[in-house]
Image (cartoon, rainbow, N blue to C red):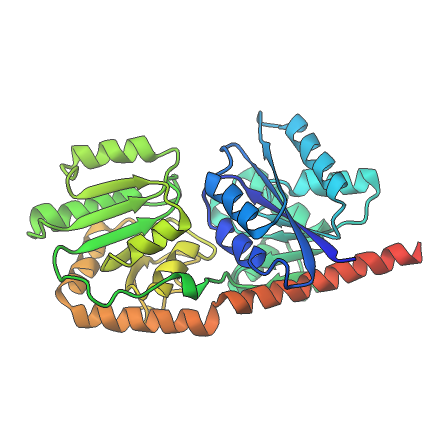
Length: 377
């Protein structure tokens, strides 16, 4: 009988999906039966449902209702009991407390692993509590970088040698991204892909575009802001007030293949943010062979090597951002140099196969421990 892996993931847009479907693409050949539980305040993305169906992976969606969400958590636990997984992989910390609490109360033996995804300095109090509970009671916690692991454990006064802590970077399916080779030099097209939320610094990006268009004579420049979220209407209004209604295109949510197609048509990728753990959007842009200009913040500065495979600029500094983008506009050679190095780095360090193999080994270890424990009872 195959070991069962249940993935708990957010129902809306987010970086979790890239890793989730990286692992689900192995379904049927990796020796596990996979299941997915989508949970969140947003409706389940149609793309997620279609991809699960195409891959033959059973899934369930539970809508989070109310701040405490007791009924929603009850639905989550009932589904988990039906599946009876060997391993539960929780993306983020939203379901850590109800799942670990439910395991304890029901005396089940599921092995629980938590994938930490939110930058520490941007976590809410509830997310901080979830991190604390995960670090002490989950069977495994996956951090995206060694620096992130050390920071979390340091804040909690934990020893760094815990054998339950693992570092596995995000990965990209490089075969999904083509590098552009025949782009016309004008007009210059730039893009940013993310949820439209306060922790992303789209305001600085819009101001940098205003500087380039209105003050530096790059009148044909186009910015594509891809994504949706609670700040969408405010950002559109801000762009109109800045006189950038023609220069900035808000695409809304795009499917994965649509994002890949868009990246193939742009010259420069920009990522303005107040913090990340490891941005899948940046990884995807690098896989597409694009030069990346990004905020010099935690979770970005340890991914982008300034001057080698991207450029880093001070956070909230629109002038510095405009300077960096303008330098790349004027130098196709620099764009090719940074983009080529970026693609090579993805292939060597962040491939889908490498990430899937590491998670597969951890699934096997946890599942074997659960079944061995059941056999001793």
